Amino acid sequence: MRFNPALATLPTYPTVALDRVRDRLRAEGRPVYDFGTGDPTEPTPAFIRDAMCASVPDNCRYPTVVGEPAVREAFAGYAQRRLGVTLDPATQILPTSGSKEAVFHLPLLVIDPSAPDRGVVFPDPGYSVYYRGTVLAGGEPIPQRLSGDFVQRVWELPEAVLQRTRMVWINTPHNPCGAVMTEADLRRTWEVCRAHDILLVSDECYMDTWFDVPPPSILQVASEGVLAMFSLSKRSGMTGYRAGIVAGDPVVMKKLRELRANPGLAPQDFVNTAAAAAWSEDSHADARRHIFAAKRKVLTDFLAEAGVEVVASEASFYLWVRAPGGLSGLAYAEKLLEAGILTYPGASFAVTDAGDAFVRLALVPDVETCRAAVAAWRAIL
Ligand SMILES: Cc1ncc(COP(=O)(O)O)c(C=O)c1O
Image (cartoon, rainbow, N blue to C red; front, side):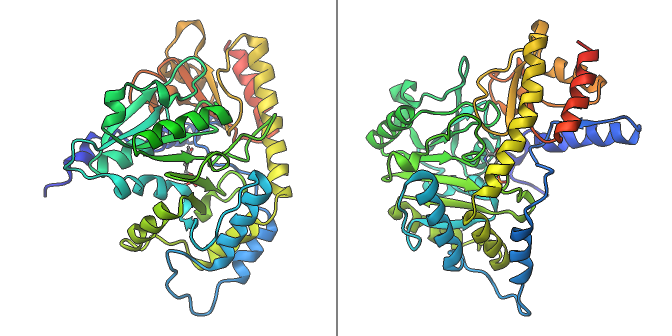
């Protein structure tokens, strides 16, 4: 059988390779400190689970792309409280089955695979679905190589690149580096995109995972030509529910509703009910942020003492660590594995060589396990 040749060009999805190593170590009976996949282990708050269970009906009918108003109204309430932004739940908000599927499908909204201007710019290193969704939609992937402070500066792209770009991804706070764009950065990015009629999409799924000051959102800066993605995965510990939101320019959102009706991309109504409960409540998200901060402190205190550099990591669920002693990220990840510490080599987030010298840690294990991991790490310094 002949398959889509684009599939063969995509590297093995990083979590697949990582999970294999983790499973092998566990089978060998070795302790594994799993800082690999960004899937938090803290329980989903009971009020969210209860909201979902109570809303599973006797007869569960097809959900709709727009979902019941409650989830959109709840997100509008969150946007008002957290960002001071007023959104119309009827025209500016859609629920998604986690943000991953929405990230993946979005290039289909603007990319004409036969046109010369079918570029999609995304941060590199970055969340690999920007690249994968672009390739499978027939777009031209344009990785913007990050370095230094790992802030993406779209206004530095050459004019020729902007001319053939239809869509720009930004991600703030950023995975894997944790860099945060300032309001001025966001405004400059938006101005460049508007000047070139480029759809600007800001992936803000770590908007509530911050440690010092809450990061700004693109929605606080502009609406025209803009979409923003949000997620309950880390904010509310709901990775398995698949609950995200896309919000923004009503003109773009109208087209997106049309697009999403084709495959029927619609979260289940009972997931939307759980999501409505989660977006309506902030104290659980604050509590989770404090837990992530405590884990982060255990690790960053140790790394500072050990002289291992953490780069850019202002917010998000991750630490971006430069491999010491001139090692590559891959070599250092292998060395850490000897101590049972599972990290992602930075290269697995990048199309270019931008991640080669780094490893990423996801703040997954609990505080006690972070302490045990630090002891194991210290032993191999
Ligand atoms: C930058 C980024 N965007 C999107 C996602 C997808 O999140 P969700 O769990 O909502 O699908 C992730 C998940 O790790 C991510 O890191």
